[in-house]
Length: 236
Image 1 (cartoon, one colour):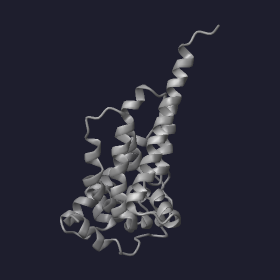
Image 2 (tube, rainbow, N blue to C red):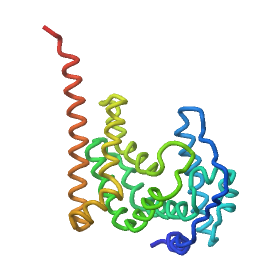
Image 3 (tube, one colour):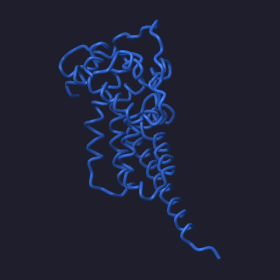
Image 4 (cartoon, rainbow, N blue to C red):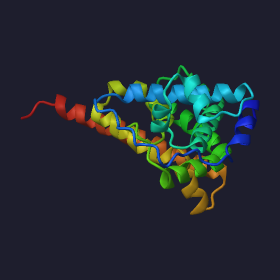
């Protein structure tokens, strides 16, 4: 485990930093701001990671200063310090296992999603205890007021990257549906189901989820191909 992750594990047991009297911040009103929200969220997580790497025990105030956002904005994305530290830990670990899988010259979306699935499964096996905590905090905690998904922004981005070569074969709606379908199978949730319900080993979990991811992508591409064939076939 790298040094930064070791430091983060020291802090994730801190009590939640929640001000119950804090006024609710209104969500952004303008539509189409998902990219900006993701950049802000990533800036907050990156600032947290830098502070921990420097040997500090970050507070919400110091993280807000480092990320150059207001504390009000910080709480919009992460209602508690515990949730933010867990997210930063998971992200730091994922960078060493998932991002190299995306730096490939492979252009077949099926093979690319298989590579990503293997990498995500290795990451999930190492961070499942963090995943359970993050899921618990998401379910039981306050709902972030920044709008958009409550978590999983990295997962969506990675899946979209892996499927990039398929964009030319799919409509925008078909591509979005495929990304959503893969989100069900790639991540901590599917590992928890297969571990708790099926008692599968990490190796068996990887085999099952790779099979599922491959089947979903193959089905989506086959349907798109059939649609194009029907469209190009002249009617009698």
